[in-house]
Length: 188
Image 1 (cartoon, rainbow, N blue to C red):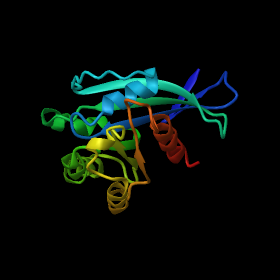
Image 2 (image 1 turned 90 degrees about the vertical axis):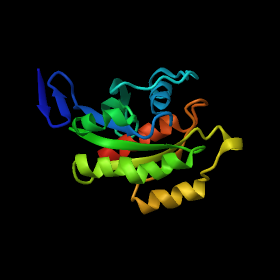
Image 3 (image 1 turned 180 degrees about the vertical axis):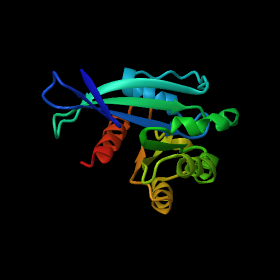
């Protein structure tokens, strides 16, 4: 028997609760949202870009080493194209945490975090939404236009909990980013 309480599911046959957390990824088209999810869940990287249509929803079960609690992460990879702007509101319902993602080689993708994505987040999400700023494609050092210091200054200006630079291609800091967001949501 399962009992639902907001994002907490208690299975009576288990000794402790299984927590279900919905998290979303936001950012311009092509910043690597889908690649980050694919790297995290399936440990793969596909170099051919295919834009997300609407939203992709994927799950991953993890165990928090610090507490031993089992968490089901429900990851909403939300399309960045403007034609999906009108549907984005419903994607925030029940969401507990967000990655705001930019491409370190495209300065306009960072500008759009503030102009578009943060605006959506504050308009449609619950109060005190936990969010982390992600600078993706950090493996492209020779093309990098947004350096860590600039990203950190921006993260501080928008009150992001932290800035994490990642590479979906190489897998750098991808697991760390997801674990960090889950820990923040759970208050660890």
